[in-house]
Image 1 (spheres, rainbow, N blue to C red):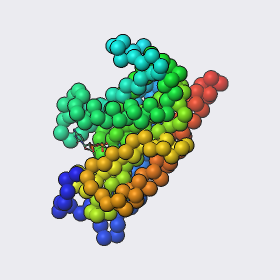
Image 2: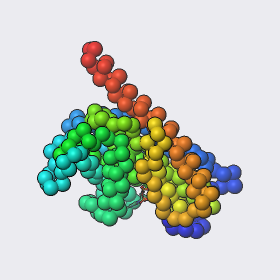
Image 3: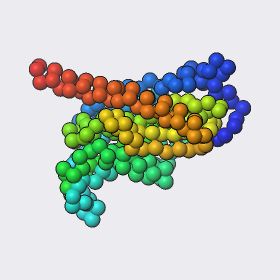
Length: 246
Ligand code: CDP
């Protein structure tokens, strides 16, 4: 959150720098089952964000001391490709990716039937190929489709979207410039079937009323994301069925 700037992020007609209205999400496209070697995978484009997710498991835990006797552990590896941002991103984990990985693993543990697979790990690798804000939501949305694509039992998918505050207005799904120069960014992830919130963070400041409005916007958007996620999985199974017929 860079605070005030001379750049106008929302014009007098309420139009944002990329042409969207306040409550409009960037276009989202998801394809399930894009990698042959992974047990499950998904490719996602969310505006200028491009993300690929690969899931392996349930499989043996290494090192062994990490294993849990009564459930599977979820290990989530969020990574940004060096070429995904303007300045080259130094490869390897850093504080930000460690934090994103931790909270995303916790979000997924809420929907995976981990107790069915004691002593195993479910490894989720998400690489951001191109970043333009909202990548933790994009990554978690793709990861959730990849876990389902791996055939791992889940009680539902997890859908994520951010809302925030730009030029004193609550807006949905901030783009990079809005994230850099705006006042707040609040990523949210939900379990759509129950409406439970499994991830919520905030960078910046909003009033309680603004938080309410931002939450409503983000949650509504999560339900739109959920439809796109399910559609991607349906398409994958249709493709499989067609291949079997041939
Ligand atoms: O991506 P997300 O909004 O979940 O996380 P963030 O930490 O708020 O980062 C916002 C954006 O800053 C990212 O999506 C990237 O576009 C950019 N960024 C960057 O350019 N270089 C980094 N090392 C980290 C983030």
